[in-house]
Length: 242
Ligand code: NAP
Image 1 (cartoon, rainbow, N blue to C red):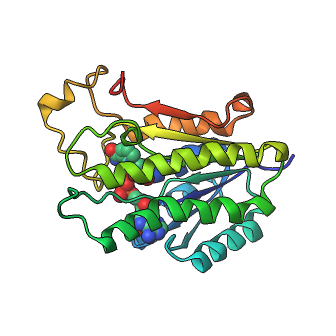
Image 2: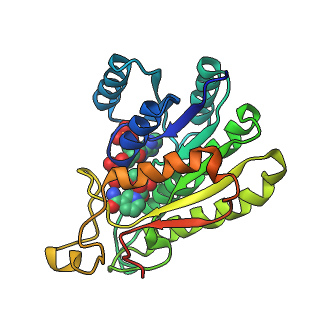
Image 3: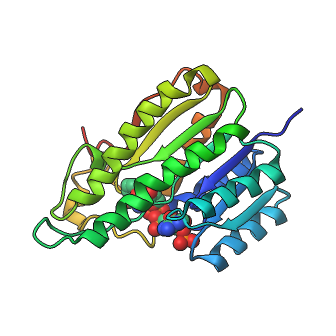
């Protein structure tokens, strides 16, 4: 039987690391990228290999097409094919209209939108029928809850919109494309939108989300059971947008 394989863009920490762990522990052979978090990435690989899983990590900067292409070719060489691509890498940059500058605009769109375009295109030659492309967007695409989030929100709206279009483009290849839109997720490095304990009460579930809340949906989307779900955005936000 052919083993299922996954490529996770930005798997070194936070939500991405949990996605890597969850897929690896669900018997996927996993290849993930990091950019600056070399130690975290190699520790995660070591942890999963100790648990008997197949895991590779590789440095890639999504701002450079050649870097992304190198990572995808390396993954295809090691894994043979890529069943699921998870575009998780992303940054947040806050700033109001009055102050946001052109360099920041280019940086956030390069990483959050142009990068996922590069990876999605690069994996196609290696993705068999039944393949999955999953974007990690944000509920910010649908609601700007805090000041200074316009540009981040715009990248995530572009990402989910791009994913809907991609789903039509690759439907006849038997590949599905969806976006998971997390709400406020408890990660160490990602500054949550000025969320104070009071604001946390605005989440009907009564708590921030966990990286595993996102990783569990990735696992489902990676499964055969999700084959009729494509071209959509799925919120995982404890009811924040309700
Ligand atoms: P995080 O802890 O900051 O991790 C970001 C990941 O992206 C890291 O693996 C990082 O790699 C990678 N990355 C950043 N810049 C990169 C670049 N230039 N090239 C390649 N990789 C790069 O973030 P997170 O909180 O887990 O968020 C993960 C995703 O969920 C993001 O797309 C974010 O927008 C989305 N999201 C998060 C929340 C939340 O509340 N946490 C809410 C909504 C949506 P290195 O560390 O190796 O540089």
